[in-house]
Amino acid sequence: MGTTTAITSALMIYGIAAVISMFVAVMIKALYWALQFIQRKGKKQ
Amino acid sequence: VSWHDILNLFQGVSTLLVYLGKKGVLEPLLMIPMGLGMLAVNAGVLFLDPTTAAAVTETATAPAGTQGTLFVAPLVQKTDNLMYLLQIDFLQPIYTFAFSNGLIACFVFMGIGVLLDVGYVLARPFLSLFLALCAELGTVATFPIAVAMGMSFRDAASVAMVGCADGPMVLFTSLMLSKDLFVPITVVAYLYLGLTYGGYPYLIKFLVPRKLRGLKSVPGKAIKISSSEKLAFAVVACAVLCLLFPVAAPLFVSLFLGVAVRESGLHHFTDFISSTLLYGATLFLGLLLGVLCEAGTILNPKVLMLLVLGILALLLSGIGGIVGGYIVYMVSGRKFNPVIGIAGVSCVPTTAKIAQKCVAEVTPDALILPEALGACISGVITSAILTGIYVTLIPLIKVTEHL
View (cartoon, chains in turn yellow, orange):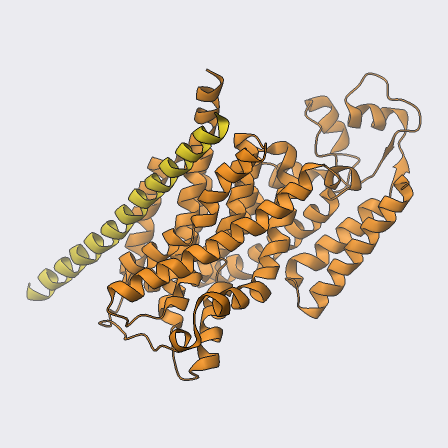
């Protein structure tokens, strides 16, 4: 019972870690594009 | 085997640690203070006076002939006893106010933050974080294995963290989840971290054929990341991760404070954190770990299991990293060197250096270090995320299990 719970928990933990890591990657890209956009807009003005 | 023989054995082991540290086989910055601390604490045993013995054993009257040392009493909890021992044991103030609350781990993490150039991650975020995630295989897979071997959920999570190859994370997790075993778990983690430098090249040679090891990765489009972008990332990532995992917030704020200080160009702070604070914290971390290695603590029957699980966790993480490297190799149309995957096992910058060294042995002019450092630094971020998940979720799973 304990081992089954542990395997399920490990899969769940890996899943959560994967989602958060990819969220961080998306956040980095979004931040990069946002800063590029602001810089370009600043240069135009 | 008498108690005296066991103490002699420990003195032999601690002398060996100092020797291996001096020779560079194990990390000298940690092993020399740790070996000396272990040697001194197992040699400097004395008969305590009745008042001190009562404080250490937390009883009204201590039995005659109680043995102890003047170093540290890690298990004392009652405030009165603690206040008394703070005036007796010379390392008790550092242990109580900096070690047992994880402050020293945060200082080390702050130092790591100052040394990290997050530009490598920002240039290729998906690739770096994917490789780092694959290289966390041991951190996750060791957890159910440890439970199957009879460990509690809390102890299993703490020992599984050895797979992330990040000393401060292991220390922080075991302090939060497994107070009784945090000394042997952290000692095992730091001993094995020293061995990754020697062991991982063999794993790479075993899993990646020579032809692929020498493959030159085709560089992607060069992206220049400014210090303002790196600073913005540190601020946003710190806020998001602290919001998601308040329990691990001290670790996140320490890491990203280091990054922010570096990218803000605060040279006085950078010099202070990367030299005085980092090396001061490492010195006392090593010394305290050694002093905590009293024969009575280390001879816990679970230690053998920890030794097996620790090496298994690091092995699985290394394999996971290389499998991740192979996946990117296939997806990229065979233009990516799979060796880079092992750099996802954080241990900054050791694993990135190992990957570069193994590739350069086959193709001397192949440069994979930028991609490897990206994966390596992402490894620190994914390790911190996993620390947050373990520290937050494991106590909840334990509650469900009891229900």
